[in-house]
Length: 171
Image: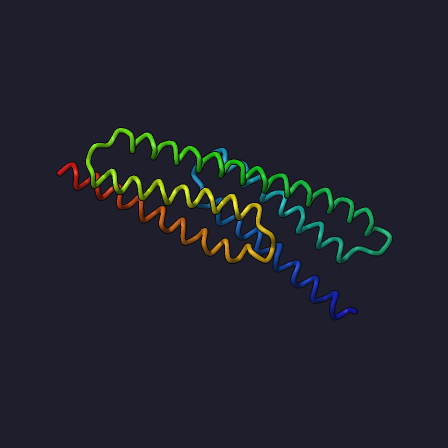
């Protein structure tokens, strides 16, 4: 039993550390102030969960119930903060799609228009996959994350092509 408990402790600790590292990485790249604030709140909640889990493993039996209650509350808070980050991402995706549509309506150059259509398609795919990722069950998350990463790569490539097409059109 002790061996199994030790394994659970180590796996849990690694998962908590991975989640915190993932949030920190996102926080380092983000530019939007609203998203930055949401990620900071999510990071704070994740750290609290990790700290309480650590306390729970080390606590004497008499104190475990109280710590468990605090941990459940912290987990609910983390879930809310994560949902808020997803909501902000959804909003930003919608803004991006709307901006591309506005540009598409104005443009007359066929090369730029084609590039913008490809960018719009990629942005829609990113938004769709982000939504699926939020609703995904544990077994499908890894597969969806890989698809999501590919879609984000496509979106970046499409944005680069739009810039190149605009540069070529202005020559």
